[in-house]
Image (cartoon, rainbow, N blue to C red; front, side, top):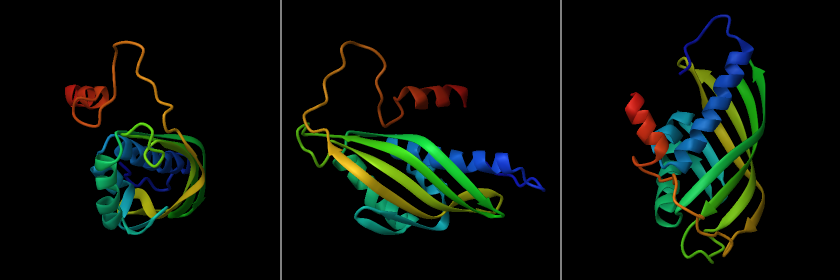
Length: 173
């Protein structure tokens, strides 16, 4: 991940910070909690709708919800601005978080939110990671009853080792 290069390159730092946010999203969407954990420093703090606490407390809170109530999620990151301040940074990533589950008409598990991840990132132990995160929910809409079946056969996403990404990762090592 982040080996220190002195003097560090600001563009490399920005890219490493962006990668932290994207790995977090992949971890949530694919149920790879090690990726979510790795996005934070061990003493990192998270503030989500309905939750405030340490990264370990966050994992204990979010994973059962993802596994029990949701069939899937998809986090899409758009605008992402990183302001560097030495070994600290402010990262603001705009995104859309799509959630779906059963029953399909339940608006509490079938919704899309506009989010901003406002992160205090720090460079410690040779890597950038989240020190404190505010997952700001800007808006939410219900998608209850709006999902339709795929129109034919083809690749489908899963949240286990059968997902095309995980199979490719396994094949390439």
